[in-house]
Length: 428
Image 1: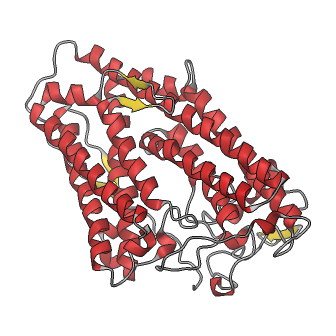
Image 2: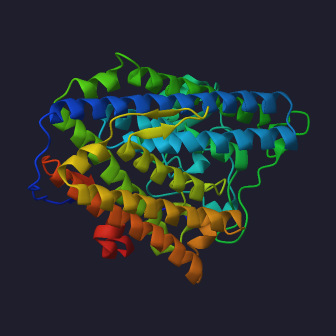
């Protein structure tokens, strides 16, 4: 494994949309407000479920650290996997909501240069032209240099992780907090490339009486802090979408058409530039397991499936909670149907198709072929399965553009990706 290349920057894919000839009903303003209310209710519910599962993860991690064993480590891993499902469905609220975008990097930033955090395999390399902290290994070193200055790292507290280490040196790959930092600390590196297998970190990396790889106490301190911090960060976002919360008010107090643009910006950008492009097409083009979203745990197909489900949830105005109850109400779908029934029918069908293609990837993973294997060079069938999901995402984005036009909203620039818009640049 050579030093990782910095992630390619997304470029805006601007599409000028033509206005539809259909007229909205006379009570459109009321309907729009109701749609926005449903949207904020779903946001609050999905972040609450993310918080609930993060608290369980925190508990399981602390139980593991109290009594390290294969069983308690596996319980923590299972809690992490469970926590990913609701959180990934929340990503449909990104891109259009600045409050979410400014916060999101604290909990779900990727890819990360894991050598910042802990020991890594020799094939990882020892330095990077882009990142002076590429192998800083803060767990092994009570002081590190950031921008040439010595920094006290003797206490790996939540405040240190979030205030000093996260994006240290203004480098995005220095991810010190959130789901993926925790994932690395639970699984360790996946050294299998595009062959079968995920990370294989031993529980003894945290066993003070039988410590492997050294620094077990500091590693435990880091993991505990990261887990606690995830809960704190999610509590913050839940509060922002609660009644009178900042994020809820930003949507509901704005012009309703601006609110609808927020919704569609999030759906289109996640569908196209982020998911189809940066998370899927780029890795497929490069056949590179380092471009896998949940790369340590091999959970990527489930995360992608939940992203697609989150898009569908928001469009249809319904979300099934962990307790089995459904949050639902006036939907974007109903507004589009009133303006242009054909567009709504088309978009709902395409959302179903995307979910089916994502499920096909997840089913292959359940059958023993993880996402990093599916994108591997020479795996024609696996590659085709991933490409089919990418194609479905791109196709549904075209219908999201038609929905923007049907609702007579100003043209929206969905986030793009070089891998989709300028593939030649990927290999330059």
